[in-house]
Image 1 (cartoon, rainbow, N blue to C red):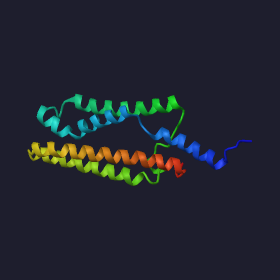
Image 2 (spheres, rainbow, N blue to C red; image 1 turned 90 degrees about the vertical axis):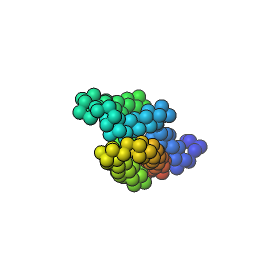
Image 3 (cartoon, rainbow, N blue to C red; image 1 turned 60 degrees about the horizontal axis):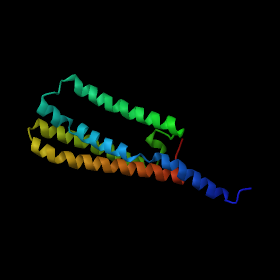
Length: 155
């Protein structure tokens, strides 16, 4: 019989599982660059005149496919299949909703500023929006990790 109490074994298993909710530094660096590129899309297309260019759509699609591929590869490599729905993590959902709302509001604000020909102001808003969305994503991930450690994940 094991010398470690069962509740300690469960807590250890939850901590090991929660470690898979953490993403590596390289992912966050790439995410930050992609976030600025996507949030500034109205700016870049207004300067380049590439709003109707098909490469813009293909670039956005490639980022989405790369993100899905990374997630799939990580699950396959580690063998750990965490719930993908944000509703499975009760304390992470409010942070995710705040991040989603901020992303949409920030993108709308940048798009509106570019449409009003206020590009310098839009360039000032871009880093603020990118940093705020980035911080909310980090908060969401840490809340997911806490939920995993505390066993609050719903199927």
